[in-house]
Image 1 (cartoon, each protein chain N blue to C red):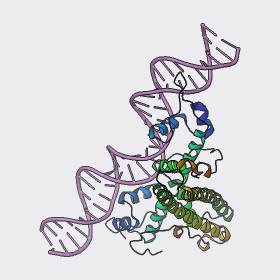
Image 2: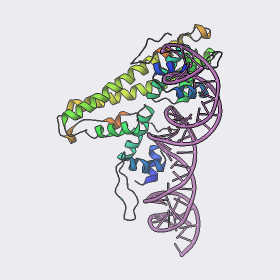
Image 3: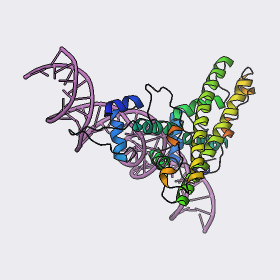
Length: 138
Length: 138
DNA sequence: CTTGACCCGGTACCTCGGTACGGGGTCGAT
DNA sequence: ATCGACCCCGTACCGAGGTACCGGGTCAAG
C-alpha cells in the first residue's frame, strides 16, 4: 500500500508517516524499484493505535514502548513482565481517575435542575492527587 | 496565598500560573495593595486538576470546559446536562480503551515465559478504531 | 506522449503548552 | 538600612509533535 492510501485510511497526514518513520515508531517499509514506500496493511493499525494512545495521554516515547510490548516485549520474560506491569499500574490509575470524573459528571446531570450553586459536581476532587505536600483546603 | 506557594503546592512553575490566568483557566485572584496576587486555597486544587486532566489526554481547551462544569455548568439545565453527557461519552470511550489495553498487557504478563513470537499481546487491536473525523494535534 | 495525481528527500515553518529572562518594586529578618 | 528572597509585567525562547513547501521523478488514463 502506498503512502497516501495508508495516510488516508489511518486519518493522518502523509508527512506524519515520514515523521514517525524518522522517530522509529513506524518500521521502514520495503520500497518499490522506483523508491516508493510499500506499506503492509498492519501499518494502518499501528497509526491508529498511535493516534488513539495520544488521545489517552501517552507521549510518542511512551507509545514507542507500548508498541514494543505489542510486539512481544523484551526477550527476557522478567523484563517483559516488569515493563508490562509498570504500564498496567499506570493504566489502572488513569482508569480510576476517569471513572471518578464520570461519576462527578453523572452527579451533575442528576442535579442540573437545581440552581447552579446547588448542583453537585465534585470534578475537582475527582482526580487522585498523589503527593499532596500539604493538605489542601477546599 | 502568594504565587510561589501555590505553585509549590501544586507542583507547577510560577510562570504556569500566569499562563493559565492569561488563558482564562485560572480566575484572576485579588491583589494585595502592592499588586501581589493573593490566591484562595482552591487554586491549588484547580492546578492539580488541570495537570492530571492533561495526563489523561485532555487539551487545555477541554480542561477549560470541564472546569466550567465543575463550577456547575451553564445556567440552563438542558445545556449543562448536554455538555456533561457529551463528556461522559468521551470518558467512557477512554475508559473502555484503557481497559482493553490493560487486558492485553495482562495477557502478555501471563504468557511472557514463551518465546516472543508465541506471546499474547493484542495491544494494537485494543483501541476502538473508528476512523477519527478530526485529527489530534498537540 | 501528455497531463494530473502521486511520491521522493530536504528543509523550513507552525501550534500547543509552557519556561526563561530582564528590569524593576516589595518584604522581612538581621 | 540592607540584603536575599520574592513578586510584578513584558517579551523572548523552548521542546514536542507535527505540517508545508520545493524541485524533481513516476505512474496511468486518455
